[in-house]
Image 1: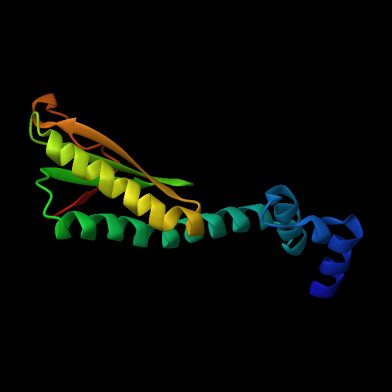
Image 2: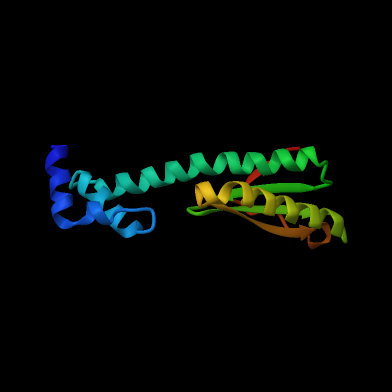
Length: 143
């Protein structure tokens, strides 16, 4: 069955074009290997699972680096999306040193992980006086 699908794909020319630089051809090749019913849902679920698995170590690296550098942070929460991790952090009013540290740590983490995962960490900073709650769909981190 897979041989038929592979020959069907190569007859369309997708197999030769499927490269890292040509994601649409790669997607077409993968879709050719999937069953007719439910194939796209399977591919979407697979993509979401892969994103989740790749994102967890990135966020763990960010949290561990914050702890290691003893950043004076009030609260931290995050949400994993399709191609990025949205982080939300609350700092003390006027604490520009903590802001700077968090932004530098974010840049370091992105530098370490983006090339291999194509997933980046994005950060929203708020101050205590803003009196914002962490977004409801975010996961809170306990320090």
